[in-house]
Length: 425
Image (cartoon, rainbow, N blue to C red):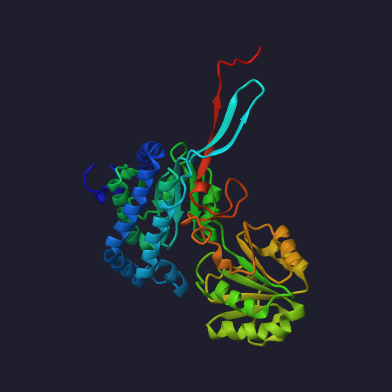
């Protein structure tokens, strides 16, 4: 097929529809490729990322430096050697996963002798629209390769040149495995019109996956004419119950809030039982303030610790994505759950308690996609779930919920095997 050319990103036309047609054609061959080919493509892409490390980090540094945004947003944009190696390692981890295609989910025989099987197949062509985090392009492409789906990437304008180099490395890996590099396409430039065109690509793009801020996701959900698998806001809660182990809770909360404040799995609100709030809250505030976290809280929290600012009502509905934590003192687990149901985004919630029955009640009554017991909300991640990587965290209720990996990007077909049966009149 010859070497991968940057112009292949542009296609012969700047039209998203033209690009989508190429991807759709290439995705057919990908869907019928062998597991060995798809795995080889992932391993070759990982090596191509490593080989391109200096170029990727250089252009990424330039883009981050010239972008005037807050530190948390810059952190999401920034790549370094460890993060780029994690991208490559994620592709290798995806290659180690079982084949998600051709899996028999169920099989039964009807009284007339017909054998019916339900077997997994790819979704088709995925449209991936994401903001700021350039690693999303590699994760999305890797998951789509493994699951036999073509993908059209449209990354954030802030890191467009970084995304171009990552895209080229992924295409190189695909080509070295003998697959059509058109299975991974990228919008030809950072023109916002391409997003609108993707939303209208009926019959060419099968599923849209937006990954970004609330405004982006809501816009796509409102305007799309094709199915959307939404990655919504990550307004996550950590609830410290009255029977929580303090030292365990202390370590988990620090990690859940401060490990990386700009990711969707970061805790944005602390709920704490009034039975232990006076004892625990000042010590938790010590830890968080020392790490540079600003606290805003309800009336009870402010009375307990004057370093906590008075929260506005909207603060509890805010995904901070920064070193800010909302704090509310609750009477009991019932009030904690009601708060989550009112303000939560359906992403991830955690309870810290040593009481198994209380934990079970919380997990049964909180309606979010992921619920945790005695663990940091930042574990809501495809890699941490053993998926290799993720294409997003789905917070809806149809098709997929939580981290979306290779298995979640499959559908199924029915295979009916007979021996000459005909339906009676």
